[in-house]
Length: 275
Image (cartoon, rainbow, N blue to C red):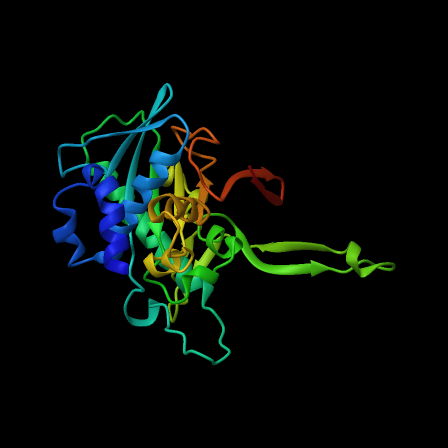
């Protein structure tokens, strides 16, 4: 069923993928499948057209969205190696998700794609979006939005402020402000939350997907149209996170996503606004 689903999706979007996507899929299935999913999302987004890219050097996608163009580069990072690797989860045993190690993998992926962008000889006035799939991370589909947002903005641990008196339901949930991520076993190695740094101003936004192929297949019944339903499921999985310091800001509401976040700094507090 996975092969049938993959081939069906490929027949619709393969023309927009770089190189021989079927051959590439034999070596990195998750990465190619993610590119296919993105193609499907772009085709479903209102007033968005995919421009065919003839060169293998450059971004994975160039989109025409009304009067503006956008370039998108996709990546599917691994769990990492050594002390910085995301530890595996054992089924049926209660465990703590190592959020900071997951966030370190996201910041590393974004840094790599920023370097790649700087090496391309392309129009630097276009909004640049980095699309990141978490499908290689253990049980990535359960990651809460705040855990992912914490890789890019100063969101720390969740807290709850109880009211001094009265109904406890009137309490307030908030997050500690945390501007850096500590690397394991490296006391002097602190990684800043990426969108707080000016060096990432070339990145307009990050598009994050938590799910992989098997997550989508489980949503479809035997008598339902695989392509249409899969695109809707993919859209409902995506989180779009805007960079408030972007040189070329990405307008909101262009792409079909489940959640879209913008950031506002107000003194010691920061607010992430869900569009």
